[in-house]
Amino acid sequence: MFSRSIVTLNIESNEVRYVVVRGKRVLRWGSLPLAPGLVSQGLIADSAGLSSAINILFMEEKLPRSRVIASLTGQRSALRIFSLPKIKSNLLDEAIHHEAEREMPVSLEELYLSQHLLDAKDSEQQFFVIGVPRDILDTEVRTLGQAGIRPDIVNLKPLALARAVNREEALIIDLEPETFDLVVVVGGIPMIMRTVTSRSEGMILEDRVPQLTGELARTLEFYNSSHPEHPLGPTTPVFLTGLLADDTTACDLVKATIDNPIETLALPLKCPPNLPVSQYAVNIGLALRQASSRKTANPGTAPLQVVNPNVLPQRCGPQQISPGKILYPLIAMALIAHVFFMYQWKIGGEANIADIQDELISVNRQIDQMREVTITTAAAIDDAEAEADRLEEERESILAALATSNLSDSLQLVLDEIPEGVHITSIQQAAEQISLGGDADRESSVADYLLALERMGVFSTVYVAPLSGGDDDIPVTFSIIGDKVATR
Image 1 (cartoon, helix red, strand yellow):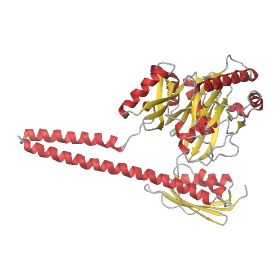
Image 2 (cartoon, rainbow, N blue to C red):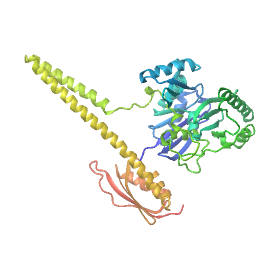
Image 3 (cartoon, rainbow, N blue to C red):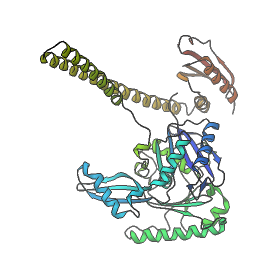
Image 4 (cartoon, one colour):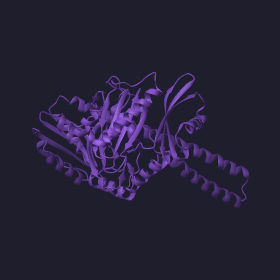
């Protein structure tokens, strides 16, 4: 296929939500309700039960278990901005660790630290540093692992919300049945994040909203007293997200207690019109980590790269294995065995030291040659990745060129239905007809694709030209033609 999809996963107290994104386009989304007690007040309470539910979700929805980006609750996490003098890179981690020991509210033995460079001037540099509770992150990673998922990235939920909102200055209120999250964004950077949980079980919405607004007032008072040079006022926009953001009663209660203007999200992703954006704002913020860049047409937007660092410890993430890590040990083992054999043979034959030295020179020459091969292999991999990026850009340009055609929507639907094992190599259009050429690993994959196109109802007639190949591991080549585009 033209590009690989990513799956974003958001675990809430009442349900697990997913969004599948390819490039800058949302393909599909959904959720799975959770039984009571699996997640309580935003924290995982039953790891085995939750992993079973997530496994069922991935099986039923046929979601890939690789390239997964997961959210993590912001509870008990702390963020700080450190200003440090310019120092040598090998001393930087120690300096940040020292500052974190002084500034973080709990011992660093209980936290995983993540850092991101915000700004570097002549003699000073600023770092955005996050401390995440080890027990909360370890529990989520273990739960996902039991479901067969090893996430590439884990982002804090409040920071994903800040990325979805993408504003220089904003107040974000995430409304969920058991938790409320508050995020204060200034200068495109999340300055404060707080999670408000119900004081007791069974609290009704009318009782929880005053709890929320009281916490919001204290949060703004704290920020303004700490930053008198840039206080937040009644003009700072408020964004409502979460499951209850679409609940009329909840929204009316919140609006009645704040004076700030409430605005709606404007996303850079291509989202279907029926996507409940507020409910899936966290998932979209996770996806934007891959899809966005600093180039944006909207004034006042934030530098997206700085608000969502990966908090997943390197030992927990997917292991990136370079060609050198595979080839060098194998080469070394083979050459050591060869040298040992030659050494024994030389000793047995009473060979002189000069012969052994010559043999070692030859071995070193072979190592140099194999190193060059490894470098060439790595360069070929880089070229392949660059070619994949080029194909994605070419696909986007094709879709853009077809935007004014009455076939553009139909073509996108056709591309979204391509199954695993089918590769499209050519696309042609004429009048009300689309021709797709490509190859597949077996004839049944082509048949599945043809059946999917027929069920879509995009074309009144769909047929496939005679197949070729398919024997002795030769790919099946095909040509599918959709005729007389149906009115949708």
